[in-house]
Amino acid sequence: MLKTDKLNTAVFVSGGGTNLQALIDAEKNARLNNVKLALVISSNINAYAIERAKSANIPFKVIEYSTLGSLNAENEIVDTLKEHGIELIVLAGFMKILSAEFTRIYAGRIINIHPSLIPAFCGKGYYGLRVHEEALRRGVKLSGATVHYVNEIPDGGEIIMQKCVRVQKGDTPQVLQKRIMERAEYVILPKAVVIAARKLLKERIYAKN
Ligand code: GRF
Image 1 (cartoon, protein in one colour):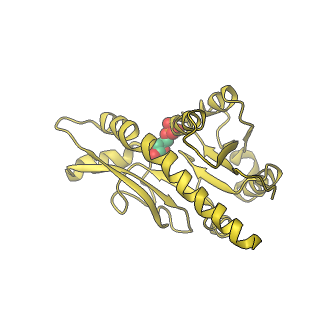
Image 2: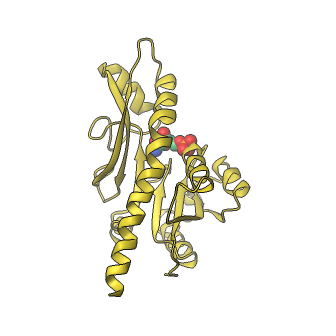
């Protein structure tokens, strides 16, 4: 891997990329400290997130799972990460499940944002609006977002940061989703990325000595 004083970070996306945008804005405003957004990987050629990467001059790559199959897709991802000297991976609305082997190769180097307070409404099948539909169905008064490390268990890795958001009377899943994104996701994701990067950079310093 290439060694720079900033940690080369890749953001994996599949859709709108508003969390990617929150990271791009944080980097512009010097809130990402030792993190450099060095690559965007999209599993979807039509993802609007790609436009955001282009506008921010971040290299991007589309990985076609449907034509490659999961194994080849992951091999291509690994090659691309090596090419760009990536040391930290941020899953921000990435709609593919990474294999256990991939999560082992990058142990401690992959983080994910999930739109609930883990361990509520998480794991297999809990993605997108489903998370908020279920939160409303159960009548929770508080929901929120979680950033956590990724291991072989879906949404099961160590929690880095969480933020609560109040559920309000009359909320629809869409309204709750928007409030959680604006008040929790875009706030904690840049902070959690800095925390994860700081830890890796420290390990790098210790490894040198
Ligand atoms: C977010 O709600 C995130 O928590 C979840 O997927 C959504 C992605 O939205 N993992 P965007 O692509 O960042 O706009």
